[in-house]
Image (cartoon, helix red, strand yellow):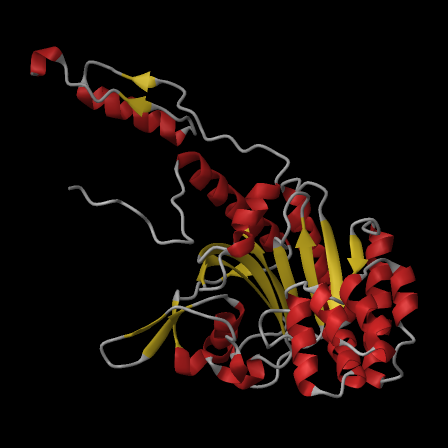
Length: 363
């Protein structure tokens, strides 16, 4: 009885056309990042757990294995933390900051396979290290918007949130740590019903406005007086400036505020954003500021970046990328000339195939 040739659940094979489209997208996005001054780096898919476990970086299920020396290794579930390790080990003090880095690679996780999640994904992203200005936030957000524009993502939009607004207000309103944790988890999972059922009436309205509503400057005006906390007010003011810059550049109708945005990874510290395309129920792009992560490896360096899920990105595209087609077949009876003609065509950018049949006289 023949074995069933099944691949692991949550993975897939990419055949010719799909593989070509994916590679074309990755190259186009990396070229876009290059125009902004971001240079590509590559990190191993395997990382040592005792190096990357800093500050509970990976607080989700991951694939692990032991090597021959007994070290616990993991298949990276994302690439931001490995980039932080690279900065600490290779870039330290002998480079000029800010440092602009880009990457493309595979990531792996054992998250729920519901909602289209996969165990293996291709990510493309950027990291801006060593700048904490409003302009640095805007640069990364603009790159994210241009990334969504570059392949005509259908009806794309970008939601913007902030940890100091959402977490700060929840800490202020909800004294019970257990209830607060449930609310946070429910916000990440977009479980509005649980939030509504668990909260007392005196704070429910404010929390529900954070968890279930979004909008433009009118939403900021609604939320800005919810707290007098200094960090809360500073975050509101920062977002107002960012919005004004994006509005003046022409992205008013593409961006909105959403304080229900919360990150799956524990290292995010401030700005958060998610990119969406029509017909896709989950974000195709996620990013934010992680000013304390690199300090866990090296020294304090503010940082902000984003990552694109290439599979979801492909599903959202409104343009077609066609697999290259052969322009002809070379079947010169002289074998040497057959290869010479093919080589000449390839050097001139033409796609040609060689006739692989032997001459009848040679058989």
